[in-house]
Amino acid sequence: MEILEEGDEDEAAFLALIESRHSSLWRSSLPGGSRPGKAPNKLRDAASRHLRLLPQYFGPNPIYKEDDFRTRFRMSRRLFIRVLKAVVEDDPYFVQRPEATGKMGISSLLKVSATLRQLAYASTADAFDENLEMSETAALKCLKRFCKSVIKCFGAEYLRAPTPNELQTILEHNAQRGFVGMIGSVDCMHWEWRNFPSAVAGQHKGKGKKPTKVLEAVADYNLRIWHCNFGSPGSLNDINVLDQSPLFDDMLQGRAPRIEFTLSGNKYYTPYLLADGMYPDWPVFVKPMESAHGNKEKYFAGRQEACRKDVQRCFGVLQARWRVIGSPCRLWKGAMSTMMHACIILHNMIIDDQANDPHFSGNNYLFTDAAQPGGIPCVQVQ
Image (tube, rainbow, N blue to C red):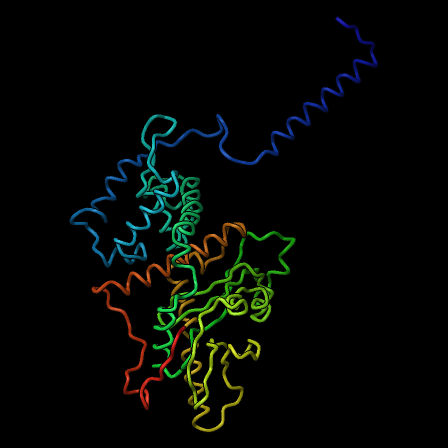
C-alpha cells in the first residue's frame, strides 16, 4: 500500500471530488425519460377499454352510428379501418404485444383512436389517460409514429400532382364556372409555433405577434389539395414563400401535361392559378383587378374573388377537421412538418372517400350548363 504525504493526500482528495462531480453532471445531462425507481407503473386496464370500445363503434350493431363516427373521428368507418390496417402493417409499434410485465399491451384500435382524437380535437397527450387507459408518453409516441406511417403508406397517392384524367376533370369543372384553363387557386396559411427556440423567434414573426410556420397550398373546387409546401418562416410573405416553393418545377423541367384551350379566338397552352394581389405578374397567375370599371370588369372581379376562395375554404375545412393545425403547436419543427403533411393526406383521403360514398350528401359548387352562355368551352389535356 502506497503511503501519501500530507500534500499528496489533499491533491488526491481534490481530484476524486472533481471526478465524482463530473460524473454526476454527466449523468444529469442525459436525455430525459423513464429511469428505474423513478415512478411506479399505474395499474391501467387497456384490455377492458378495448372491449368497451368495440361495441361502441366497431361492433355489428354499434351504439354510435356512422354520423357519430364521422363527427368524432372525422372520417367514415371504412376509411378508418383502411388506415388502421396500413399503419399496423407498416409499423410494428402499432401491433398489440405483451409488455415487460407479461400482460398484453395497448391494442392497435386504441392507439389509432387516440391519435385521431389528438389530431381532431387538439387534445393534450395526457387527456386520454382516464378514458382510453393510455399514458401521456404512449399517446405522444403514437401520434408521431402514426403521422410518419400515414406519409409512408399514402403520401405517394394522396400528396401528388393530378394525373391527366384528373386534370381534365378539374379543367372541365372550372370551365363551367367561367374560368377556362384554370387548375386551382393558391394561397398561404400560417400555423402558430409555440415551442420555438428563442434564437429563431425573430425570423418566424410576421405581421402577427407569435412565431409561425407557413403552408403554401393549391386547392381545387372540391377542396382537395394538389400541392403543399410547408416549413417557411412566418416572416416571409407570399412572394418569398413562392421563391422557395417547388410549385412550378414540373412546368419548368417539361414534365407537366400539355394543356390547350381557346379564349377570345386565341389559343393558350399554359394553365393558370387564381391568386390574390400579392403574387407576381406572371402568366400563370390570374389576379384581381386593382380598380374595376364597368359592369364587365366588376363582374370578373367578383367571380375571380369567389372562385379564388376555394383555397381559403380549404384552409378553413382543414383547420376545422384537424383542430391541431388551428392551435399553437407544441412540437419541434420536424414533427410539426410531419404532422402537417399527415393531416393534408388524411384530408385528401376523406375528400376522395366522400366522393365515392353514395350515402354521403355533399354540396355541388358547380353551375349548370344553362348558366354558361354559348356552352362550356373545350379544354384538351395531352
